[in-house]
Image 1 (cartoon, rainbow, N blue to C red):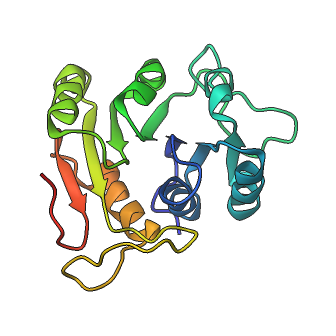
Image 2: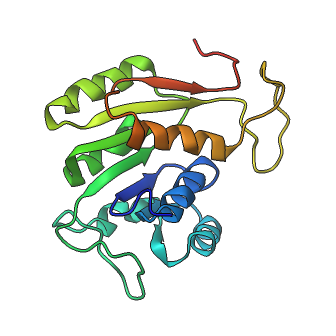
Length: 196
């Protein structure tokens, strides 16, 4: 499947669960991906699941992984094709402060999707307004009632089941690639529970 062929994406802030699900779908669709994962164990797991089409780094190394020319610098044995001078199309991040250092690497016309429940509608709209002159769309998914990897108990939403990280990933990718006339939106992915 080549749905995301030619796309260059960074997924930062959630190296497991939702972030890993987003990275998997991007890789399956032919994108080049840089994923930040917190612990050595998370990085090893993500690397094994994503293969050579993605590079997995420590979140503190994201700045050095993005070369000074805007591209992703490949280390020895790195499998993705991004090199110096390449820019990013898509950024998936948990919060606005996580996105800010990546903005110089994001191409005009790109997309940002915030992936944690915390971004307020006001913060999403503010960042969208800030980047509209560059044609960059900014949206957010607001996940709730999502299955935890450890299977922690959670109240069931009106749909009668917990959601999955994969379902949140599909919503995030929709906002990033298909919702081309949408910016400043916050999409609840919560099984009908609703958000304030």
